[in-house]
Length: 281
Image (cartoon, rainbow, N blue to C red; front, side, top):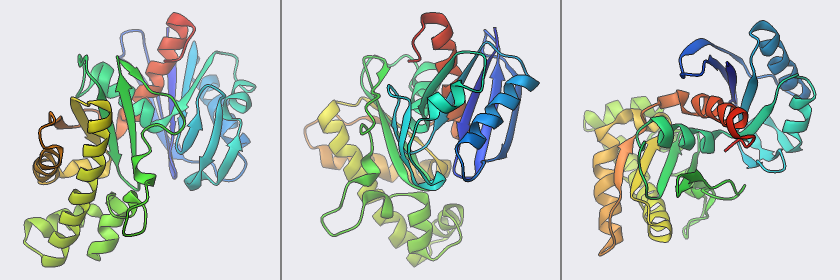
């Protein structure tokens, strides 16, 4: 049986068709439809007509109530209270699993990625345009619409965590076009880049430390664009998190294995779960 996974981003939709064994049968990208969410339903319908599948897994960004099938808010898409599952299900003839992109990425990383085999709590932190997290406890991704949204917490000095600890915020504070450029400048010893980098690491470490203390995370998987910096990010971040936890056990911080494909892989897993058990989890 084949399944289609669809990851809807702010600008790009990633799609992937996989077989029973997880082998990739087809994959492509196309611009995210703008305006009416019904356009997304048309995109998914056309994909299933082009490549017949037995189920679809669809994940979207933002605050998502997976059980109700509703996207409560997705700023990048201009959505609020959109019944995504109902809209898309009506346009396809196969079962549809619906989820949130970061939680789907977490599912991919604990099933087949950097945290595969872990029996203890895991935090998946996606550090990209914004900052969002997903928590995995007892092998299950917590599916509350509000769970893991560490980037939205207000800092005591004002502003939200993701306004300092994200790839886009880092570039803005360093006066650079993107986070990749900031990383290159950090390696070259640029003062402004170093200052912005250290502040980003500090705030991110505080968020991870608080989450670890609350849930007992043994592993933190760092994904998103900023994770591409590798040891330049993970080494100081590991030190800062450990320093804040005191006598508590520090988690192992690892780079996401699936990179920017984590969410679409997670979408295919949701579809496979739906076929196997009747539950997309």
